[in-house]
Length: 340
Image 1: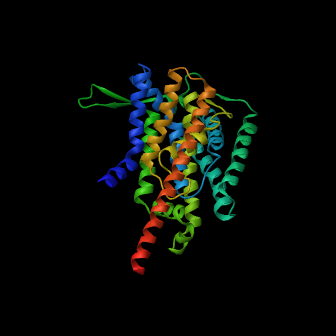
Image 2: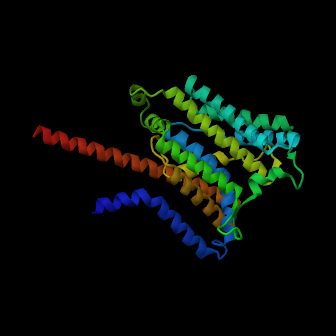
Image 3: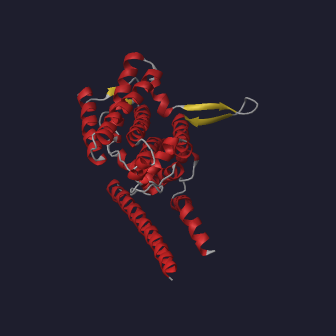
């Protein structure tokens, strides 16, 4: 019975943590659970969460992307410039996604084909993408008109007619994009051949090769999907602030990694879920929101975020070591029984 309870707690502990944070946040500040605050949190959550879904796929597959924030900025400023030149929202979105995919195609080339370590390859892309964004804009923002339609992606609301056609349900567009990316990530990981390959490669790449998985192609697909998510996030980010900001989204890659790791994605690869990452993103954003509401300084907030990452990694290592000891203990027990 205790083993069953322990298993349930391990599986759903992240959800329990989220509930506790909500209760604590409501106790600390009366505005925490208001509709206005929750809507604001959801809007702020969208971009880091979308990046976190891409990071989750990569980390499960045993890889990494440190360039997400910089590629987001490059994709966003180019998309903003396209809108200024063409006034086309569709073309703006397409360009943003294509830039993200191209940059991550280069990441995939370095990692999958040239065998560069993901840390080094994406660190190089981080510098190149940010430099390209600053060079293209000459360090200046791409300015939009105050009433520009470009802001619809990040600030607009979808009015959904309710039954009878009179009442309206208002859903911010960023939340719709977040739901869409969550569903895509969940479906890829749970119901596709690529998803099974991701887990297999992250668990044991050599065993994955031996089982017939095309590891190189799978790594390309992982980075390209991540690139599409990053490009979309770039458009949403710039749309929310209604300018093309080449210095924007600095450090967002670490927010994405934090959400993924807190959500149960293991840095050792082979473990992680889309739902866990979504909950992890909510936990990170709720903590930031609570600290802002109670007046915690920005420097202290950085310390807290760093501590959260450290604790999540320590917990991941502890769980991995515990599982290894359990497996080794079972092997030793079987060996003793066989010898007897």
